[in-house]
Image (cartoon, rainbow, N blue to C red; front, side, top):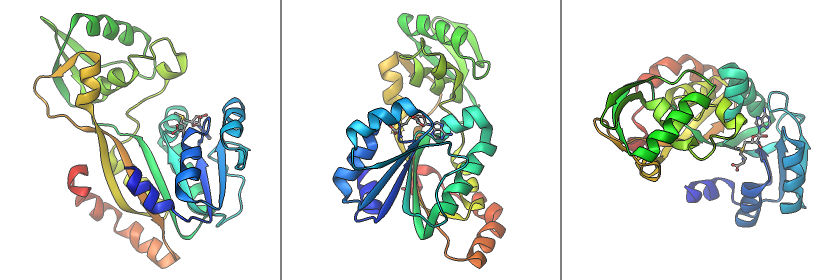
Length: 270
Ligand SMILES: C[S@@+](CC[C@H](N)C(=O)[O-])C[C@H]1O[C@@H](n2cnc3c(N)ncnc32)[C@H](O)[C@@H]1O
């Protein structure tokens, strides 16, 4: 994954890390990719203070992704890691669309957005087995998770039926059951088709779409086994390019639905 990221930012003149948090990833991007000018932006002032310690030479901006305080065409690359699921949780898919419209505006022609986030595996009900300590945690998760009501049924003998999306919520949050913020937000924000469609609507053409991090590894840590479903990739890495002109943007928009029907699965896409 880092090879794809590095290839797309190496030597970049001006990069924005949108939702940079405490600057861990921004620091790595600056060290590894020889970026000339780097800028980090986040909604949290506290996190930006930490980012300043890690990345003293970066310009750091305190703002909301739905109104980027930059001129049109300011950046060659916009990097967005694990921010959009928080935007979706607070502002819905419309907030994601407004953010990506803004990203498209501040990118120069031919500029790239690199997007990493959780994926929604869908609502299909599947059967899983949980060991006794996983079951205790699961009961607590069902009580505390407030983003939506968890879909599940007890089949007894350690077996439960649950939607794929809700299983992913549990498996990725079982260590943060005490965090009110984590319990309010989703780790299954959008499907691959939804995010590709939004990118295309914003004039950003996906060049590489890659599923990564197998849910099976996460489930093993928690003490859960899939009984009747194949494991899936729980995150997406997408590199999309800003289209050069309005005509290309219009034709991309016209072909949107047709293209989505033909999208292969993430593994084929890699
Ligand atoms: C899970 S952290 C990811 C941090 C970092 N990008 C990483 O990959 O480690 C998400 C960050 O997005 C920020 N964030 C959430 N919504 C935002 C918004 N609307 N505008 C700007 N930043 C936002 C949060 O404050 C938080 O620092």
